[in-house]
Image 1 (cartoon, rainbow, N blue to C red):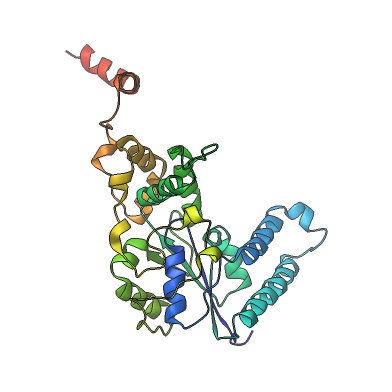
Image 2 (cartoon, rainbow, N blue to C red):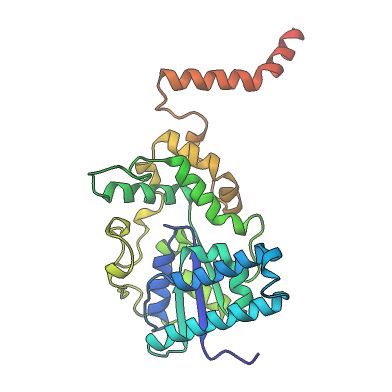
Length: 302
């Protein structure tokens, strides 16, 4: 295969981890068109993943994995070519879908020359961002999981999102930390540019153009920061949005992700201060069950 005519950049990560911000800044820095989430391409890659996972059936249609890959490569490259034409035929295409992280192996196989980037963010701030969606949702009708503050659901969602990268990450993936992108956008993009050999122009960094809101998300999913310059205001915002027991639960569920990404636990993870008498009693019983035998052994030695 010769050198590609089009440089493809694929951005994935957990939802609410900064994928939209990174795509926006990169598209501005590369003078390429801003596009909505690439759901069609993501679904194509997911179909390849599913076909590979059901090899007993797939072999009747494509006996060799190379034949299967060639079919999906033709479909995906045709789709990307169509996107590039609609976008004006530039030399770079920046596509984003958080679910790209789930099909990274397939993306690497179909587009071996693509630059694959994953945004990483503190799970507690991601959870806080989900709760802010619930606050922006209409307060009429049945409340969804974000409005109900279903922290267990949110925590599992975050944990599953980053699971493909644990424990050591995927080869060839560039990681961009949201905290660095929001607080030091210029330095963060310069680092990504060096690592990926991208020639970035950062002159519009303080006033980037954004995709129209109707093409980005439902209204409740659009944060107050979208449409503006990068801002650190949401870094550590979970301290004002999450309750102590919610922080503790996120840290428990997302412990492997936090350890892998280098986020420290908070002091509130030990005993949430807002526990009432019932929850305090349950916690005491749980502690006694957990430590019964060690305490009994110590008492017998007295």
